[in-house]
Length: 106
Image (tube, rainbow, N blue to C red):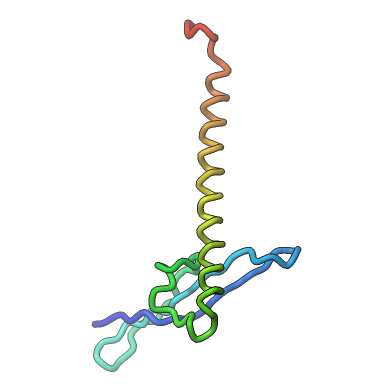
């Protein structure tokens, strides 16, 4: 048996102001036993990064500048999400600490 991964879809969206909001790629996985196809599935849409787009024919559709811009948007969104998560963690720590006496005694 052999599984092949082929490009399936490039998803790009803009926000309400017309600014680029994000892009995702999706792959199709086909399982073959010799010449017979025994299964096929679509992978999850993943944010467009150079790693995620490895093997995706973006060059057929976009210039390198456009590819770099889409990758930068996905990277910035991931950094934003990580920062927001960290902020929520710190807020929870701070909120938990506000219930304890300032001198550390109970």
